[in-house]
Amino acid sequence: MKQRILVLGGDGYLGWPTAMYFSRRGHEVAIADNLSKRGWEAELDVEPLIPIASLDDRIAAWQEVCGPRIGSFVGDLTDLDFVRGTLEDFRPDTIVHYGEQPSAPYSMIDAQHAAFTQVNNVVGTLNLLFAMRDVAPDTHLVKLGTMGEYGTPDIDIEEGYLTVHHNGRSHRFLYPKTPGSMYHLSKVHDSHNIHFACRVWGLRATDLNQGVVYGIETDETALDPRLATSFHYDEVFGTALNRFCVQAVAGEPISVYGRGGQTRGYLNIRDTLACVGLATETAAAPAEMRVFNQFTETFSVLELAQRVRDAAAHLGIETTIAHAPNPRVEAEEHYYNPRHSGLLELGLEPHPLSEELIDTMIERISAFRDRIRPELLVMGVRWAPERPAPERPAAEPVAAAPAGASRQDRA
Ligand code: USQ
Image (cartoon, rainbow, N blue to C red):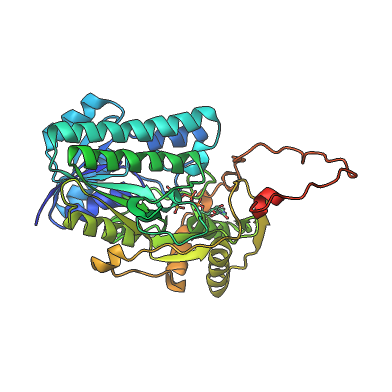
């Protein structure tokens, strides 16, 4: 069934390909975006590897190449009047919400960037929820959350919820979250606010806890160079596999932070579009917040680096892997077993990471080799200030740990 689909953050890495994906399938699509990603790039003096057209030029190119016109609303989600006006004007059946500051390192630069990230993301989503309550209560919200909301707990990660048995009774709660950055925390706050809006106002929503996305090309971006999406390799906006491929092309060592056992869910950008498509076709029920864990495979960063090194070697590019000091505070060896069956049950057919795909990425990146600025690979954002280890008098007796103390307590 054809829908009216509003893509918030439709000028970004995932938002622009999503808008084209739905438009090509006959849906009526509009984008809402404040173009702030381009502003953050200017602030940090970084730029996407492949030059990208302005929003107006992209939309014009899409119409020329494919026919339909994608609508656009330029404004800020933290402006409630803009959000309400956009919903009243466009009357969407589904809202796909990517319109947030997406970088964990950006949120950890300093107090101002952490506060900006949380205000921008949480207030934008709150405005959206209130506007939906008032002017679009039947619209389905498809919200991009993150697997990083869960962190790396020492138990299996369920799909959104956990039933807790306590003193002979049971209750189904949102799965407890231990995220690893101020950005990831903003998405935890969003999930709780969306859950509230579903419970209290009867809104319908799907929260997609997405893993790390890799890839440059989708079926639609490949149609014309003016339709390229924003691909980053810098420390702040670049993500693991994308950065590793650029490092291989630039002749820089592949930067595995610390020991490299950090394991995350990953997915191809084409699978992001398929997942968002499946979520859009199968709306949540009124008052329901569905949660899907949106990734197709898990890798440690060391495994990913080895995959890139081996694929590059077959193309005749020799690379090394460097265990760089970890700028983040995160477990470098840990248990990780997240469930991700919901989207597969809806019919997702994953594109697993293959050597062919890495080779295709490396070849595409090689065409823009001259634009790679190696100084952007390490920009010095740290999760915590470096402090000297506290001094302990050598002769001080160590007290016995109380019974029941955990290993950490005893350390
Ligand atoms: N890492 C390295 N070397 C690098 C870059 C990253 O070892 O050069 C490690 C990080 O320490 C981390 C892992 O790779 O353990 C993933 O880091 P990342 O930068 O690829 O991804 P992350 O910061 O977690 O954030 C990205 C997106 C974010 C999305 C998230 C999904 O920027 O928008 O929400 O992936 S997830 O990681 O599942 O939370």
